[in-house]
Image (cartoon, rainbow, N blue to C red):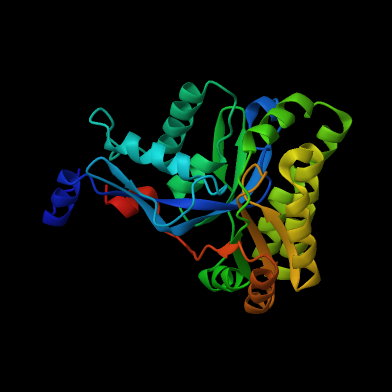
Length: 295
């Protein structure tokens, strides 16, 4: 473990920090049970404000729980890092991500994917390739200026709609082998990889279109991902400047991620129409979990 005075104080006070994540495209293709040996691809990014764990208590930095931003995985990671029996210092980021995946899988006792764990552990923007027993980031050439431009085109808006993600999860597990399910999964795989390639080309219009395609595939795979209110919010956003949009995570409520050239105009229109919706302010977090916690 680190030996500087500040790090010793942090360790004594159990001050540990982790980001959350937003998923742009490819969600569900990181789940081995669904993919059955086929490769999946998910484009996502770690975000701040950070979640903090100190003296046995969590500070979720104002994030509403159940927003589809992986607060539960971040909390589980911090608990794991805080365990007296876990030493992260000699471990690679991949090792830590896999340890977290195994821990959550064992505790939840149902088939989960790897995208949340790896996104939070690695930090930054990545397109991860997923297989039955691994995850790895693709080699991309995307500079910070491109990511800063991407950030300026994004609006993260909490719908105020309570998430019922478990309905979507059960639906996916039940119907993923149907014709519609397989068509949706194939499209999600393409979207997950193509989003990163479009961003690499700085083709932001294509990025927006891919987010839109991903949302349509997500709803085809699990119709309970959306509701009448969410559909109304999405349609209104598209009519008021949004070029693309999707719910974060499994869906059923929580936070919408919208892509627009004029985010302020879209935000104003959405807040006037849906007065109970509110913006979740964020920035990309580029540091890995080891850099954040200096081990």
